[in-house]
Image (cartoon, rainbow, N blue to C red; front, side, top):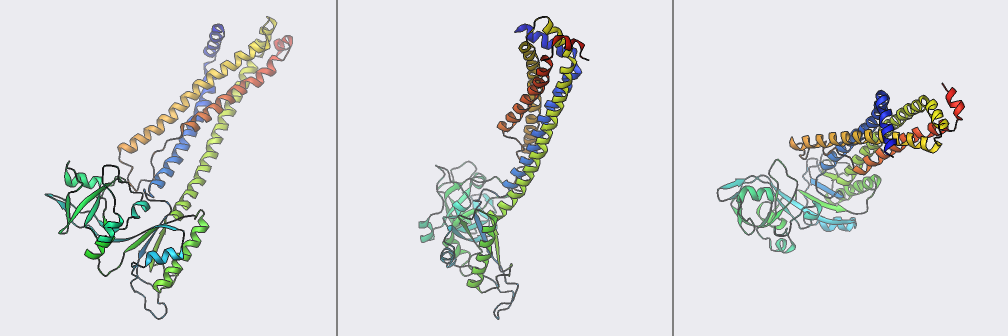
Length: 415
């Protein structure tokens, strides 16, 4: 076996250019496939992250002002959401699974001792945590519950970043923070995406309504929907939702400014549909690059075998078996394609990881980033490399099999 490898290395040294061209076709095909897939994944991951941590099947509605006269009512009338919205929407749309109205108190001063900040205060209901995928870890307290709502307790849930800024290493749970002169007890610390601005803090909706908004109604309502699996389903739901809200609040269903609706699932599905198309395009280009690599390897291996046909005839004349000659060619092809395939794979993965590291170091992971984590699943990389290696081996095997089937005397005459 050692003699075979020694002979293979000797052949490679004698044909450096041919070996390099064969290997370069292999390495370039793998490298470009990884690069293209990484770029596609980076764009897709970036846009997906912009949808945030909230549930993808969530719907947000904001009360606005009418922009069209309707049934004798003038335009410019303000729409107000109230406590009847939840029951009404769940009766009209039984597939609504979670619901939370919101009252927003913009950027008040929140202080503890000498420390202060300007976090937005949101009065919400307990289901808000499920809608926004908010996590309060064990040991970090709890979120707003129904008892807090019923008793209109002055309690507050804050982000970990806010806790670190206000309490400076002290335990935050059980302490009181002051919001525009009103003291709230900290009952929970939630986890969420790190953001540049100060994250929101949360109090019971009933408390917010009594203190900040006794008669103005809710600014918006949020809920989740189940079973809407296609874009068409979501289009129909949006139209029905606007029509039902128009009936309840007496405005034209075509008046887009009366109620603002963001169906996150519809937006997500549309965006992902675009990126699935981009992914398909990337795969087509990537597979084309692989095919080009396979063709390059095949052509070079075919030339190699033709050049060595006379050598094969001499080997057969000296008693070498067809199998031993085939084994020599296959091992040579395996060595070249395996080595250069590994180089292409390492170069591609290394470049995508380097770009990802640079993006992380530059802080390009905020909520508005459109490119992040441009890495590729290792199983895809290994599968593509394996395909090219097998293609290289077959590219050497078939012409070699044909060459060794020639009689020695004919092979010696071969030009």
